[in-house]
Length: 399
Ligand code: ADP
Image (cartoon, rainbow, N blue to C red; front, side, top):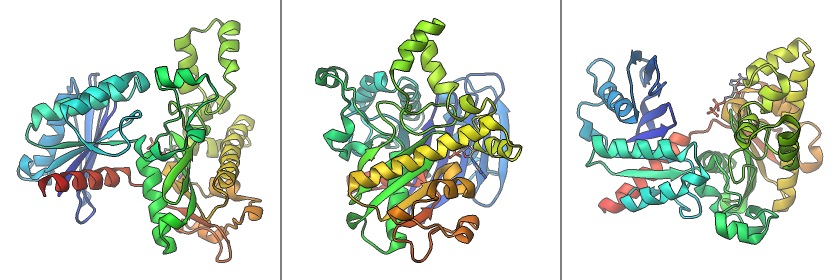
């Protein structure tokens, strides 16, 4: 089945057309600067053909029209009729407490997504816009939503409740939700497959380290804890997000610097993390090059980044009562041997021994033969999870 996977952001849409039986990516691309001057669509086809077109792309509907035109194009396209697309799968960031699995999108589902806007004010509105646009442009094609939060819906109360008055959870649904679900699911299952074991027998910690970073404790195939919380701000140090801080810092700063709620929110989400600590960049590659020049603040950013991963690895091993596998993924996890090594140093007591050569040559397994815990470096594929979930839902309906 050919599934169009869409990840709609506020001013961008990432897309992939995937042939699910062969797990094959026919084309992938991104439309950027939607609604702004200088909008651009860039696409790469399976055979290396690439194209970039600039145009005036006013909204999400227009962007999706462009995507379809390119997919259908005689020279750069991969399909001859739009009916060849049998389903559309959307990455939807927040499913709240309602959705614990991927789902066929109906008007009722859209209404619930609207109700959840409060929980994900930046992410859910563009997701809904994308769904509405496809509904207009491809009215006969079924659409599915695959949620970032769904995989973590198996967390026990003790992991998802905060130490706040319980009534606030009931009133405002303030709790840990967790994000990056498809990625944590995908790499934990890949690790089990590579170990030749059933995931239901394993205790795995996964670290998705990209611009946003999160870790998950996965016991017997189910997420039992994760570092991101009510929003994707909690937990690890990220590109521009602070991760864990003492909440009192917020009120302290508001008093000292006269910051408004909006300004503090922007400070924590956009000006903190690697960027805030180093003052150089949110991009790990630039932090690593600054390290070569003995930049002190880049060193602090690097140290905090690695230390927090190590700390959560220990805490999740304790939470699960053991550890069988540890997985690195995401742009940083997949590409930085230096970070993998730093995180895994001095963890022999927990059963982790890294093989330097395997780590440096980007082997899938980077631990030594004798390491009790297997350590992996695996590319993630959230789009494939979205496409296969969509295919499963649609096939069940057609049956
Ligand atoms: P997103 O979370 O937006 O999907 P990615 O998973 O692509 O992002 O990760 C982006 C991060 O990966 C950036 O911090 C980037 O610097 C980092 N990265 C990419 N390549 C490397 C590399 N070779 N070494 C270290 N970090 C890298």
